[in-house]
Length: 311
Image (cartoon, rainbow, N blue to C red; front, side):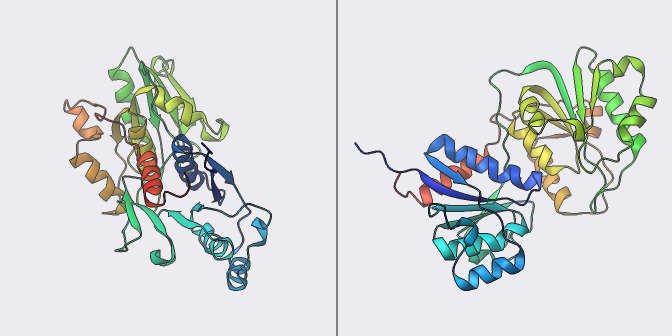
């Protein structure tokens, strides 16, 4: 029997880690299910991409095999996806809500907490896709804190966040804890913790500045943790923790009114997939979902069913 050829994927990236992780997660899920070859042609800037589209050519991919799938996340990739498809064919798969009309793309994978447009090519996802995979065995004595920071949707209070961390660590004297910041975390907050937390707590709490971590640190550590506390402003990290199969708690961050992020959080709370810090204080226990989220896998299956191709 002749083996069918691998699917050729062109992946466009914009250098934003959160965006690139989404397409990497989808591609990893596709690789688990079928033979693929992945190429990353250079992304064109807006004006060159428009000119390439008008001319029906895409010079950065001229020497590459014609794509079956063209995948990208982030607004800066959209015009390159369209120009590449016009030049070489293939199906355009865009992750997150596009800045251009959704009907221009063959498939739009859009998180349900975004304002999802009514479009035949849209598939809603529970959170953004990611690269996390559950570990076969968890470390029952390991907990993680994933800390975000102020944004256009949320305020920030150093002391309020520290008090929540102190309370959780104090409640579990036999646990080891690791805490990592992220790009939005105020740069002086870790120093604030070291100055104000009790020495006994700090001996069980490893503090990590995201700038000093290896790129795959979270991908490796998150699946091992039994429980994960995430500041509720960081919806992508909440879904990463759920994908890892952890029991997930939400640390309170003052919201600037109702917004799309808080709407997504509200849905998780209603479905009892996460526990808010205030509810945990009153005795509600964290518990993992019966089955970890696998939105990357679900979307990969959908793509293969929609376009069976030669495989």
